[in-house]
Image 1: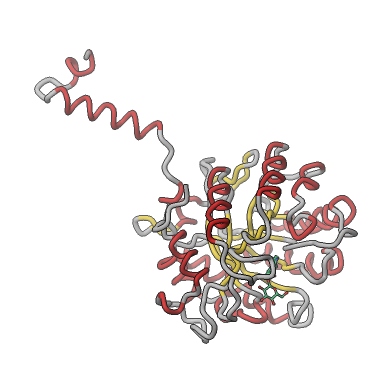
Image 2 (image 1 turned 90 degrees about the vertical axis):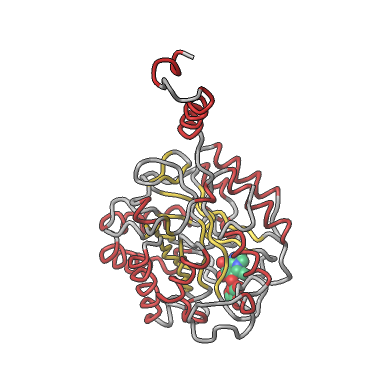
Length: 349
Ligand code: IDC
């Protein structure tokens, strides 16, 4: 009552009370992260968040506010690299509200080791992301090769070059080994030693952009990394899941790792089984995304392709040339679900 008497003489009491309470409410409540847009009032996400940083287990913007990035991954650049271009990224940003793009550079299966020119699809992704104010994950897609040490020299050469040329851009995030796998490919003996060498090479050129390290068993054993994490700053760890194959047990593992202090980033997940096919698991997808929202974990969905597999967002043979401009009839069931989530038509609670 004191406030009203002193400051708002002449204004009806209920209006001034409403005003005071609104100000109090706004200053105390955190904004719903889903309302954060790829472009807000004409300003793209990288121009708002700037240089990302890791504080504790949290990914934060340059001012230290927690952020959750959401976006899409390319399929293998050797097969569907036609979508890694400015037109498609612009479409994903403006029509899909995508804040982060992942450029998946396979090493084997016709990937980078036998086709070095694929590097230019990564370069094209980075330069498009820079222009569009989006974040871009440079994914060294270890998969069939299992142990990241197999192509460690190539990784050092590749990441030093990319970090040297683009490390000054706040847009760039490095993912240095997609999915190490095999019981013989352990954290302590294979992945951590590899990560130490590659992160050192990146840090020579780029002191601060986020580096994400894959974890054992197709980036699921985050507990192993939590027992013996890397030293250094702005390092996160990959957690991957497919809604039709992985559930509560993997979420429990993630919670335990976070409680032990490990910062996680879901650089790849699918709505399907881990084969990339087998139908869309909508209920399980929503459950996983609520979990990620609750823990403020950023995510990237697999993937942009028109191969006809269920995890691909396009129908078979839609957009054959990589133009963007998709209508609903170009999208697969997974694509329709993903878009509705990304544009916040479908709210994740
Ligand atoms: C799959 C693609 C599929 C392709 C295969 C090749 O969806 O079209 O034939 O790779 O190896 C992963 C991998 C990712 C897989 C995906 C689905 O990171 O490369 O893509 N997956 O199987 N981990 C779990 C699932």
